[in-house]
Image (cartoon, rainbow, N blue to C red; front, side, top):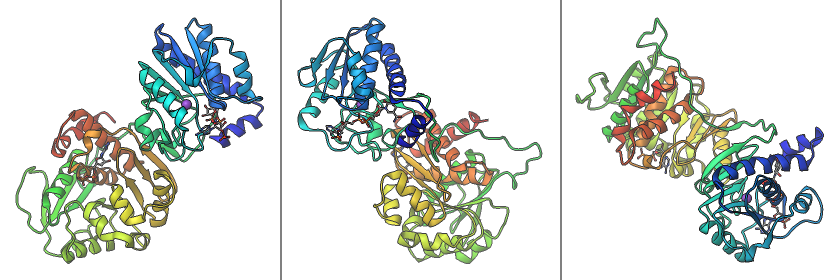
Length: 452
Ligand SMILES: NC(=O)C1=CN([C@@H]2O[C@H](COP(=O)(O)OP(=O)(O)OC[C@H]3O[C@@H](n4cnc5c(N)ncnc54)[C@H](OP(=O)(O)O)[C@@H]3O)[C@@H](O)[C@H]2O)[C@@H](O)CC1
Ligand SMILES: Nc1ncnc2c1ncn2[C@@H]1O[C@H](COP(=O)(O)OP(=O)(O)O)[C@@H](O)[C@H]1O
Ligand SMILES: [K+]
């Protein structure tokens, strides 16, 4: 953001112009929610406060009843000019009385340390008493680059200026921003990091053939239910042919699932020699014994693109980077936070940085799951999914995701991992609430239909 801002300054746009744009966007948003109610604007000592003074002036000029609660001030610069141009009522932050609508412009991207007690108390008192609160850029007390809570008060909505920052999408910050609205202040922020949107999927070609339009093998192990769940998800996510490879291929629905008996790792190696298989899913319910280890070895030694999930991630452990970086075929890893730490440790910055570094080290695509799922590919691109629902925090939904990943990888989507994450979240939303993992499988097909 600072680089982008500097590029603007180099092009002759000054700080006051950017601040006026930011203040205008915030004032418009606040006006929509104020609906004639009195507004309290908190204005801090830096440029976030400058935006706040600009917003207060505009709201006042549009007929709003506005009071500013001020905390410190600079003597010069654009923020000081904005403060001078505000001529309406002003009180000290500590003395401010709550009002129905609050605009939080105390601190934005300049948050450098935890809020002091008196500031934190005043902020919480005023935000807590407002019916509606709108943060300028970020809720005050949120660390921009990590999403760390430095004493923040959660708000109803946030106007993110120019670009989303990590704190808008990473936990715990993401949960405290309320509805995040990205406002354009005419700053270009090209970045290899972005949030995912609904994918555009193509239906099978006119001359499609079941073996050519996405053939997937799902490997079962000690707990066959998990692999079965993944395989059903694979079918509903658009695969043409799904093979369930297991030691005990008992017949269970659905009938469309093709069962193949594999007694040992050699059988799996033979099955995976079939070049028509566009993706193999291994890990859900695989187990952790010698048999599971041998199956994983066979899968890693194969030329098939792999989705590595659950128990297979635990088996890889700290050896993951060495074993994956020598594979020629693509590998995707789908760890939750606990599995990620076992594979790659917990150092190295925020979730975006850690996932990007891990993907580059392993030469694999990593889907780092959770309420703030981060998807990183080996080329350094990072995509973040903030579309999930917290109802997904139920056993087995990860197995479903692994299956969807297999389908979209085998179907050859351009951004297949993003598509899989989006379909998973959408299927969950279509299902509603208090579901079990099995319930979100059939709605995946409806989610696919929304993308055609
Ligand atoms: N980028 C863009 O394109 C645009 C950005 N714009 C806006 O600028 C904002 C960033 O402004 P900013 O850099 O002035 O930082 P800001 O958040 O106002 O805070 C800095 C002040 O707070 C202080 N301070 C920090 N922590 C503190 C603490 N715990 N307790 C007490 N004090 C603390 C710090 O003091 P210091 O650390 O120096 O002691 C300094 O005085 C950005 O979020 C957006 O709103 C728009 O105007 C236009 C386009
Ligand atoms: N609070 C949450 N909000 C959104 N998505 C969540 C949340 N908790 C879990 N999920 C998603 O649910 C899935 C859970 O996967 P995982 O932890 O592997 O569970 P399991 O091993 O039981 O299948 C992941 O896709 C994860 O991103
Ligand atoms: K703020």
